[in-house]
Length: 361
Image 1 (spheres, rainbow, N blue to C red):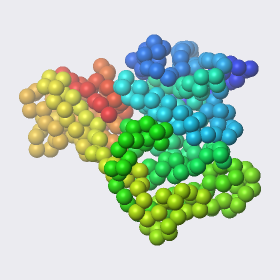
Image 2 (cartoon, rainbow, N blue to C red):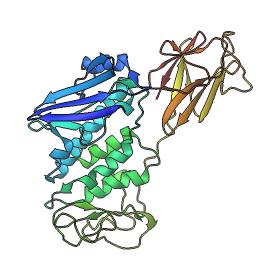
Image 3 (cartoon, one colour):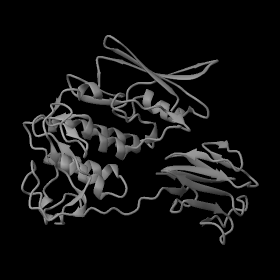
Image 4 (cartoon, one colour):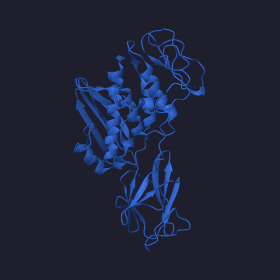
């Protein structure tokens, strides 16, 4: 994502992003950010010169998440921050913004020290060259902080177990987990399924200072105390308890969220003429007039070519390719070059010849 730099002078921050080819401004998203129509996003300005486009984010009297987590972190501090970041992600989704443009980096997530209110930087660009890994960001976060030794650390085990039990990351199910760990929405806890515990993602938690370390660590890197394995994952275990954890961690113990299986969540198209919903449920999804070779056929529009365009997925990102059609393919009102991958995002308006669709994630 461009060339990003940060400057800090006293309590003032300026984060700049110099766009690189083929990145361009997404005017719709810029309007949302500038107009503060989506909560939790810091203000952005745009400057255009002969050297290109520069976006700036200027603010003051805030601290980075890295600085905030520099001391001892309590359960409430940790979960309050996580649930706010989740809310910001959902706010972007609600406004049909490309969540890959949100900076999920603890050096670029900021909060007001007095109110503990989190705000993030969102760069409104097309063709963002840096994809974000939500699951990786949230999973790695506990390893970056030192937890309070005055509290039980069972919630960290539950938090990390979520990532072992999910084949795909869902911001909505993850939010449900965080709220339950915060003591909200746990009324159905007794109905959850009992399954054996597993040994997979082992985590060392120091019993003295609360630092979370890697599996191979023998001693705490913060205070030097010998530490032990606390969390589990792949092979069934017959042990009745795990040192340092509550007696509830035994075979047959309820593992939170193990019973939560979500249906596949495909991107989809809405055909504006008929309001038909079309699941884009293949890695290469072809649209055209030929019902024999296309995954979705537009049989009532002669302006659409036989094999007009493909929508393809690569590593969680989506692109449309015009297959040398007669009447072109358009993305947000602009004709795209033939046989060229053009990235599309949630809310993109597509037009095959004169047949309009809207793409959603």
